[in-house]
Image (tube, rainbow, N blue to C red; front, side, top):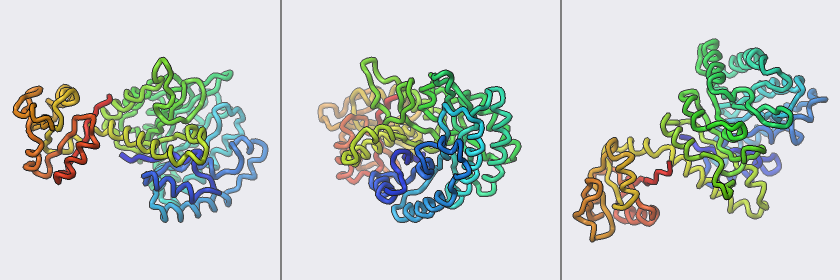
Length: 399
């Protein structure tokens, strides 16, 4: 699985080098380029009356510089998100602009050798019953361009503004979106189209993001992780929107469903509103937290895949977490035994496993994984490193 960070709210032309260096320093080697930062004006709505002034040459200048800086700091653009119209846009004329930007986005992806592009469906001023007709023509045109460069176009679930309320919009229904993808790929004779699940849009529309991820299955190429309160549009870091009633976003359910479908696409973290809430002087302290949350998501999603990747395994820990492992995975991925630092437990059994001295781990073959089932993971991992044991995995199944 590829973990990326969205450049929304981070990357600007004047601070491009500083921010790409920052992305690299925080441990991200790939990013989702949100192209909105490369277009003049706060939003695309400023082009409603003067769309002819859309400046392709300015965007090209940005991309030339971006290409050089990404090479210098070893950060790859894994996915590009074309600029989007706001969900309350009404003018159908704006769709013309969106089509032009979609085509330019494909050309820019080709320039920086990026193979994944998120393109918003046309919706502004289009009646719901006409969405498929308008988007079929639009996506087939983009698809033919993308095929020539081996670029995947990702559809994305949208909201629709109805009298000030956000409701389900284009591609928000799994079965409709899957039908679109299947039809477009069949027409093109290529698997050019896939899907990016926007968790924020799911939350705003009252949808179960875990069930949506599971329903998309093989069509799911990317997941955009962002938290909002289910009422107002926002892009906050997961787990930061907790209230007295608890966390309104079912992140653990999403992780569990992504694990079940063996998701191996791109996980994108968008915490732009969280970052904007901090002074620029404090942001360097926030970036490591964003990376830690990304790593946590990947860890939880890949737990079973990690267990499956080893031919044999031994547990470290003889407490509640060991029991949890045996209950969830003991039958499918049985360990040889477990060990513990408490000498009083050596020679006893837990869940049918013999508890041994950690020194026995030195006798294991290199391809045998040691799975730490203990909350003091870092301390035990360091202990194992000093013992010369390198094949170490952590087990803490939050799902």
